[in-house]
Amino acid sequence: MADMDLQSKMPVFKGRLHDKRTATVIGRWLGAAVLVCFVTGVISHYVQHPGSLFADVLPSRPTWGYRLTQGLHVASGIAAIPLLFAKLWTVYPRLFDWPPLRGIRHGLERISVAVLVAAAVFQLLTGLLNTVQWYPWPFSFVPVHFAVAWLFVGALLVHIAVKLPAIRAHWRRRSEATLRIGDAADRRSFVLAVAAAAGAVTLTTVGQSLTPLRRFDLFAPRHPDHGPQGLPVNKTAASAGTDRIDGSTWHLDVTGPRPYTLTLDELRALPQHESELPIACVEGWSKTAHWRGVRIRDLLERAGAPASSRVRVTSAQTGGAYRVMEMGRRYAEDPLTLLALELNGEPLSPDHGFPARIIAPNRPGVWQTKWVTKVEAL
Ligand SMILES: Nc1nc2c(c(=O)[nH]1)N[C@H]1C(S)=C(S)[C@@H](COP(=O)(O)O)O[C@H]1N2
Ligand SMILES: [Mo]
Image (tube, rainbow, N blue to C red; front, side, top):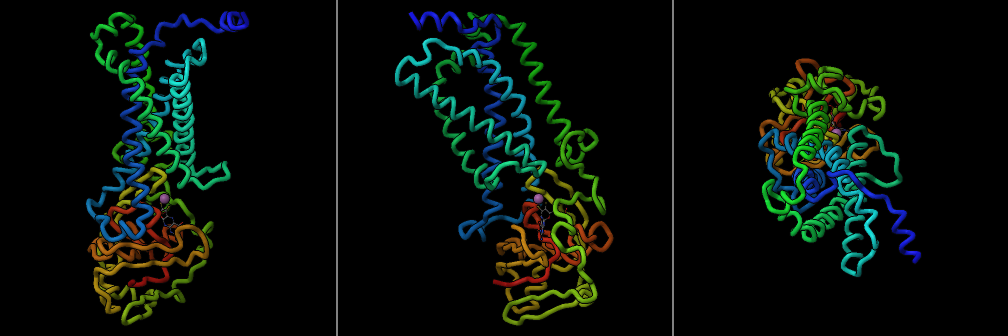
């Protein structure tokens, strides 16, 4: 009796698009976006946490590899936001299914959907806020975003497995099940509108890393052209406490079998090399710049260390997660890896790491250490 009362209070959905074909069509796109996002995210995680296992195997080429994977990670995550809204709108009437529990199997399925939705919202929200470097939560972003990614993928696999019969039946426009549902014209408008929304958020943000499209970069937190010396800045010298480095007293320590120290003038007197390499920030912006400085492998050789040594680099910064960086031998021996003194034809500005910074191919921005004071062969 009470049951009947409650049921009669449930909303009735007259909209014709909350059906399985629509859920399948939107779900396919959302699935493709989150798959790209997940794979590129895992790559980014291991490139940022090389550890002992990957330290010496990570390749230094192609020079634009990390730029591509991280650009895709952030772009697919942003595109997934309107797709997730559309998908949730399509299926939300299921919240009012009656009876709410039809047994253990049904209960487990509903729990897995709850985990899936919570994890998806969490990932897209924290990822988006990370692109603007806003962390309004008490936990550390990277490990939690990484852990929840696995939770999300697990719940997604369960969801796909449970829904496989429905997905299969509604995969094709002309399948029997799809034709039985009908409403093709409405669905086409809806799907077109969702595609337009996903396309619009992509087009107005992707220019932050895909620089040929930077004219359309209206909403990304960084514009590739805005910043001193034509390059954006993530951590300013003022915020790192490195804005008062005096080039006449600064010196570089290089350790190895034959350790030595160089002043800035001595460093400038060594053979200088050039490279054209991007800063590919993990927060999603990328920009290629022209760098000039001393090859790391030349510095190592002079210290009596093999060009293929593992290297530890230390910054003048007194704190922060990126004060100390290590690079595997593939990066150290690459001729493009420099201790750069110049950016786009001028000495580095304080915000870009004056007087010396690391620039290496195919590495995330976080490891392009600025304000370097020490290079150690390990
Ligand atoms: N010492 C130090 N180096 C650092 C950082 C830092 O916080 N401290 N930030 C890194 C990050 S996150 C990026 S994206 C690049 C940005 O370099 P740019 O400011 O010259 O563009 O510098 C890297 N080098
Ligand atoms: Mo970064």
